[in-house]
Length: 98
Image (cartoon, rainbow, N blue to C red; front, top):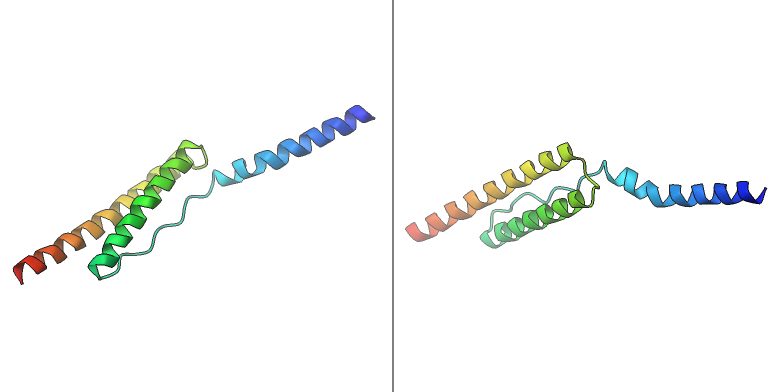
């Protein structure tokens, strides 16, 4: 009787500990906000994207994100960073021409 109870408690503990690991694998971090028109806002948005990439890489290294989800999300963050960098470059070009 006691052995059966001990096994049941042990299984319950394993389930409680494993649950976040199993369910966390399916979720990817939220995407950062879209870039704003102001140069300082764009720089802040770029930092947000870089932070999101670092978070994504950490989550992937911990095994919480599947390979396909990681690659898809990383590609999206790279596209966002490229857009922000192009906007910043265009703004700098306009400032130099004025």
